[in-house]
Amino acid sequence: MKLIDIGILSKQSGVAPSTLRYYEEIGLIQSVGRHGLRRQFEPQAITQLVLISLGKMAGFSLEDIKGMFARDGTPQLPRAELHLRADALDQQIRDLTRLRDALRHVADCPAETHMDCPKFKRLMGFASRTATKHRT
Picture 1: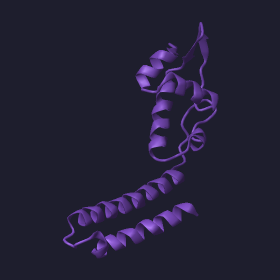
Picture 2: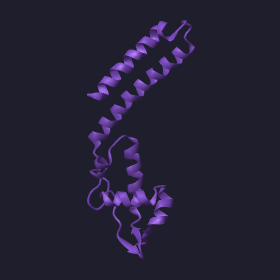
Picture 3: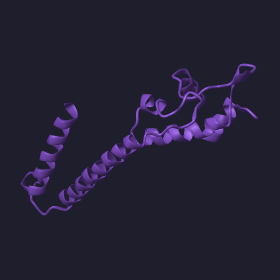
């Protein structure tokens, strides 16, 4: 089996060497040896890094992502959690779509001031409820 040098892994994955070292430190990936001072990785590390990237994009914490790998580094994706995350993303998309539509309306609203625009007032209420929800 051909091992991959940390520099090559960094170039192939787009992940900085410092991040690769950090991922190794917290147990997300594992080097299997060294060539001089340079860490060496098995080819499966590229797959792991792609899955880590996807997990981060989906909003999972690094600790959550760490739990999605077996000790040998093979993925063990929790389907129920993935469904919950997809549902949360659907809600976020709906909220962002409403926000975008309201912003476009406010930008084009014929009311003399934004405070005279009913849709702007609803947008402010939505922002207030959202901020309160995120604080609790």
